[in-house]
Length: 261
Length: 249
Ligand SMILES: Nc1ncnc2c1ncn2[C@@H]1O[C@H](COP(=O)(O)OP(=O)(O)O)[C@@H](O)[C@H]1O
Ligand SMILES: [Mg+2]
Image 1 (tube, chains in turn yellow, brown):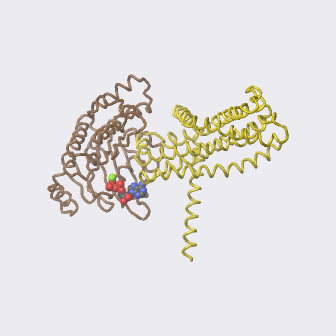
Image 2: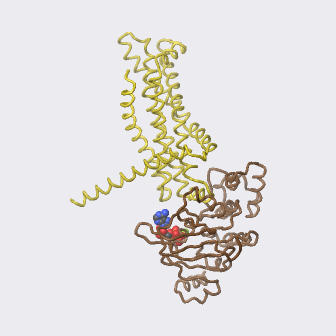
């Protein structure tokens, strides 16, 4: 009995220590990001790479989510004869919540797994040691560049997701009612103010930070050969998705407090 | 640095992983310009010793001086000038697998600030030539055989013309003929560059062929050190075993 408690206690301690290390790792990346020398070329390359990697996924998901959401919105609003509100409702829902969250979760899968596997692979094949041996600060070159790239890429991907969703929503709507794209588009964005746009964009920056620092930590510190790399990759997805969902709740609470509507 | 001065100096260096003591107060110095082979059973801490030499690992206790600079307390950025003078060939070459062989060798040159693509190309071709890999600039590392990877790793380690070259098991995983070729490339370097060479190996034949001095590690300490001819008559049991192993092979 005491053994069970002791073991449980030990696992909790290890988990907490791991979480603490991860937080320190992430903060170190942020501090290092604003200190010269800047790995500008590599950072830009990462933004391009990470962006490209997720573009088709984000576009197709955006379209699909837009179609589905539009159908739901229509069936709800129809009852009140408020069909003309469909684009507005969809626009607000996408930009405030669905866009950032779905983009974040998709990126946890796509980017988190990628970063975890890539850095993990480099660690276990001694490529990170090789970088260091060539007088390169591997943390800065590999981790900081990816953290910055994700923090830049996530808001951009979210915008892209939202636009795709509006297109999808219009496509679904126009087959039913023949609504024109111009009308749909104008109404989707007409009621969007800064109090919607700024907080949700900042939110995606935080998502980008969480995904990249968690998967960066797990990959950079991977050990144990191919199995260790696989583990780093799957744990990256799971942990960044969970942390993102939790962070989202906290941030939504905070945003509603700052911008009561 | 003149020949005869110390290139590498370990003083009382200890390193443990958890409860497992790998190095236990190890002390030695290696003169500049010499060729040293480090031998020992696998798992005795030969790779750890090499990694300590460029600060890839930190010792728990003791001091390490490289080219007259104490490196024990330095971080990645402070280590950079020391590391620029030390080349490292990893056991499995550790080539960057997302870029071509040529770009692997160009990488340290670009990092050093070399701008002109032509100049980089010229230097890389030269380094590829030197290790017998001419014409492989645009291949990806995955397309190379084990022996070619080692050569490419060697070319990359030498790109900045280091004054110390650390080599981890140059012949591991290679057939005897390829292994011998790698040894020959290493010996050729010695004549051309006059760099200090530290080669970890458990292949006594190649150690004998190359070494000015051999250091035998066991239980976290140097248990024997000397020219190959001296060690042949050593009383130390492990050393005798190592030499006997050769007769069988
Ligand atoms: N990063 C590490 N973490 C934990 N243990 C390690 C690490 N690196 C080496 N070791 C352990 O140290 C010992 C010596 O390793 P190493 O220097 O690689 O041996 P070898 O002499 O074969 O090169 C081994 O028992 C190994 O398991
Ligand atoms: Mg080894």
